[in-house]
Image (tube, rainbow, N blue to C red; front, side, top):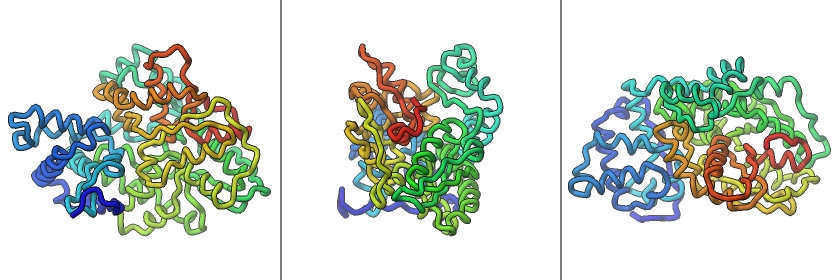
Length: 450
């Protein structure tokens, strides 16, 4: 048994179809075992709010040890986890194949799955996780929804806070009047036959967020890919299920995985690459789905064919080379490496992408932004989320770069709010929702996104 070995972490399939997976007595025993190991290590104290909650709970107990903490008091620790995977991927010395077999995020997922099975997921949270339905309905009346959810609209945001638990100061995603899939169907960019990468064919998995909220990211991605010879189709069969996973609703995530994998199977069989536009969604397709449905052939094949967007563009650059003509970005770029990009274990692909730009300084910020999906929007967590992300916001603002961007659009907005709270006379850098927009601007393909 070795601590901190160089062996690659191993993840076990999630046994969500076994009744024992939801046994609360067994879950409490495993929480106690893992929390006791964490208490003796404390290496993850600054990653998220789960660990400070755990250590404060133990330190404030009667004995100062875990033996005097009741299992009922574990709930806030479970609630504090955002499933970012950073403890598993970057800090914990006891992950499998270590004999301690410690997977903190998936244990938190198991605890939430038991809560969900008992019907303990609040109705507002259940409604928020219905991203496809919400996107379709909100898109029909996007101006009205955007007006109601604007943080400057004091009255409506007060109602949202009281009824849905969304902090009135949190910047919420805005909805597009036309989805990315619809925009893509109306007009496809001309594929550059002179590009070194000409002949590549890919399918862009639009993802809920880009499809319904941030279509500009999809348009920039498609333009850059076409300019570099890649013919693309845009599809969005169903949400990847990450919002459901956060709530422990694993059976519903499995339904999403089956639906998307089946819909994309014909494209995979044609040899098409699958590109996910948001890191959380790429993580689901590549890693989480195969752990949830390890025997599903469609899921296995899709996982092998899937690329994160930044990963795919860098792959073109390294294999065939990008089309010349990129212009420098005056003032440079500060790029935040999203946690779910880091959890894909593919390196700093967003930074690698931006380093393709000539004479453009690139500052890399590799730390949690604090937003944690819907977790950071909630009134119970918003201020804590900003506190967790404060070092990222400070580094972004102090970088002096012209632009700041993150592979995760939600993280980017959260960083922008954090920057606004930082003291300083100089204006903060402009926010771009994804690094691909920087590349599109440098090619002169688009000026949108700032």
